[in-house]
Image (cartoon, rainbow, N blue to C red; front, side, top):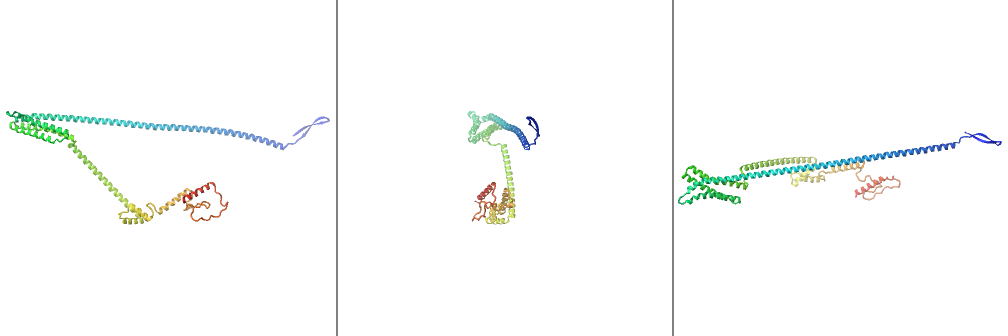
Length: 427
């Protein structure tokens, strides 16, 4: 580096050139300042870029979160709508099912009502038919009775006619009319549910008396056919009327016809046959069940004698001593207690096996090997933990501060819990 200086010679300024060297300290400071400025600028740029990047990331995260929230809300809305549609469909299905059941019930009620009406109508038609038939039968019987009286009366009047006693001509009216009146008395007795047999007996007596008169006088005064016809009419009229009354009596008393009696007897035989078949089936099933039970009991006895010979021998002695013919469950239970000291299903081997299984399960829960599990419940207890044994206190080993590394908090809490559980179990 060259420096120019001004000097005065004889009062006249004269320029002079002097050579100067570089200052390394100043250069280093300047370089340090420059680098520091560059570093600060770089740091500011990186900080600005980081802030911008963080802002961008935050904006992206916020946008993503908003998108996720919107997506979750959309899914939730869709699920709500789907659940609403599903519930609505279920309710509509229930309503449809209820309407279907209601319609079916209404149709069933309507069908039942129509069927009842049809049955009532059929019953009404049957009653009308029966009433018409009964009325026709009654009128026919009365008409037939009247015709028979018209046919039978002349012969009887001729038999009783006497010019010196003309009033005797009314005697046939007494006989025939008496039979008719007595038959009306029998009808009244039937309607009033009074004894009626004597009315019918008197009516038949008068009818046969009139028939005898017609038969005797007809043979004497007329011919055979006239006598037989008039005698028949004297009996047929009251007989037909009595048949009508007999039918009314049977209908009132509910007596069965011959066809109905045959049908009832057939039904009774069928029921008896079914009952006998059912009893035979039940007897056969009972015999099969008894046989199966006997075979099962025999197999059980053989198995017990094979698996538990001492208990079975003692059970046989107990059964004989108690007067039983076989080893019952009560005797087997008592024999098991006497020999094994335990109820059926239990024994010393079972208890040992159960204890070993419980030990294995406990070791698995504590994540310890099975061979390190002690038979005592306090095998893992250290000297510094509370004592669990009873009896005279043992002298603990001499311990000094720092001999044992302090427990961590988790180990200290676990030790306290284990000591507390041990104390509770021993108590």
